[in-house]
Image (tube, rainbow, N blue to C red):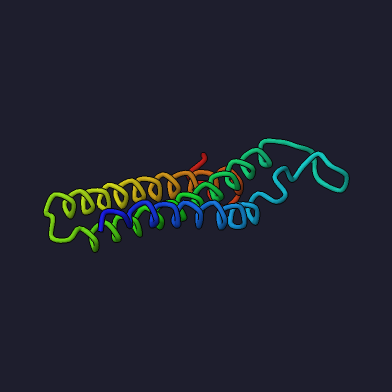
Length: 129
């Protein structure tokens, strides 16, 4: 059973390589939305929008990587063959992955909330004053 791990790892790695450019390019297609012909001048609002777009793209990439790692940990659990040590390692990998992804989502929520306040201060005049 030990010989299947390299095949699973290679398959997940290839899937991430093949799929991730399509997911990320949809977000990063038109990176800078200012300064060109027909676009507004670059300013603070465009900088905040750029940061938001980059973070949203990284969240999509983190989601893809998290899914791959969780699938790998699941395969390790399934193919542990009754070995308690291997099962425990796979379970620990899955738990650490979920904890890390939760930290990423909390950070994204904070950044998203703050940038929304910065982009449209007319809605939040009581907070800013």
